[in-house]
Image (cartoon, rainbow, N blue to C red; front, side):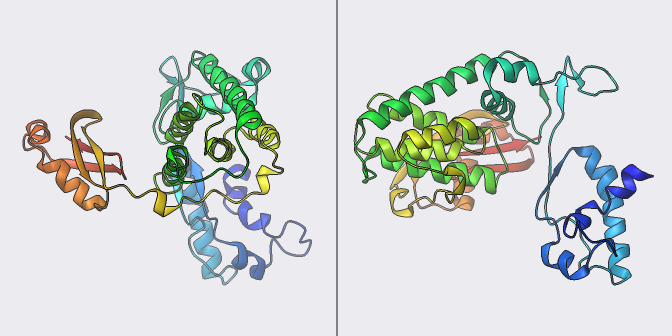
Length: 314
């Protein structure tokens, strides 16, 4: 009983953990609840959340809480597999991160785990790839130090690097916040660092590097804080999340990549002011795309603004 019963209301106790006369005070629970964001695997959705929702609705019926749904939003993550089987303590196939952390550092390991694939899909764990992520961390460190030494202060401007930095802010913010994808933001920061690398003393390089470090901070907090200080700043963890300048995101046209089931089928030059619905319409009107649709039902549509449309058909 203790596992499912306690985990069905512990988040309410967290709101009032020192209460010695009652499980919790309703005023405090109603102020903080419901839980904004809940992440877990399918087992959470099909077992734990059913218990928690039952408890919450019963407590609400009894007048002990003022809301009926315990969790405002749920994101279901995939399983990490090893040799085609889900990692499980009961199966004895759990690969702990301690040895990799000792060898490469916690930031590189965290980046590798989150870079493996979309968080809502199953993925196969392999130790290969961690070396590549470690090289990226070292490269980020080296280029940031070059920028700190060579780039002028207060050099944001409106040049190519500044525009690239604002585009990266927009993409990372959208990927994490709306799309709930955590691997593509890492790739976007890598791309920004690649733009900085050839000319670390050029106009906009310092702003672009500060942007890269700020955006990678949730993934690599230790390295990010150290590099933030190298750039003459302090306490990155207290800084607000970067905001993209809409004026620097405007483009008259861009190349729209169109995919069908994840495979590129066409590329179109389209207006930068088109809405997502208009982008999907252009994608489905493409003769090359229609040849691959071939009358099949479009089950899902994924749009990355300013970049691509992926049509999932079956």
